[in-house]
Amino acid sequence: TQLLEQSPQFLSIQEGENLTVYCNSSSVFSSLQWYRQEPGEGPVLLVTVVTGGEVKKLKRLTFQFGDARKDSSLHITAAQPGDTGLYLCAGDLPGNQFYFGTGTSLTVIP
Amino acid sequence: GAVVSQHPSWVICKSGTSVKIECRSLDFQATTMFWYRQFPKQSLMLMATSNEGSKATYEQGVEKDKFLINHASLTLSTLTVTSAHPEDSSFYICSASWGRKNQPQHFGDGTRLSIL
Image 1 (tube, one colour):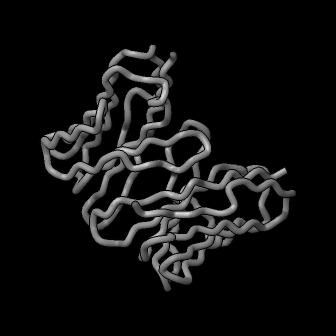
Image 2 (image 1 turned 180 degrees about the vertical axis):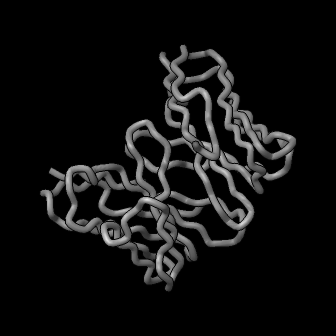
């Protein structure tokens, strides 16, 4: 079993639609990051959340860290084809252990 | 922002060849570097963690004699896939952090390894 489960695993939507990706765990994380990865490239850091309940916005992307610091969500408003990619959450556990989520592959159809 | 360079970006070689992949942090000192393996549309699987000047810590199931990791300086780590076979074909990604707790990792652009 994976420490960080993402859902959905695959998502295909039309341009302009909204979507939410979830990252869930039974463990408490010191911090959690979201990355986006395009084919043939390394992941690019989008945001880091540290405080339970924290909400961060990056243009059309809204990130939320759960109150108990066990889960997080990424919401994209009015998705665009440029948002297509693999979205990965990753969390820090006490003791400097770092885990990636299972990943969500997003395709935005023009 | 922090820049991590990975080289080569793509390598094709015959079965039995050993392949070395380099990971460099260009504008910061990376006390810790990580090596991942990734299959298409799947998440990254951590292979090993290396700290400068010490032996790498390998994840369960990763053969340390197959995947040799060297972290000789604060800006360079190498992964050598020894006697590569077709099943070793994959996308290998390194990342680096400056080691303080909760510092995010910065990733290279990956190396596509294809073994014929």
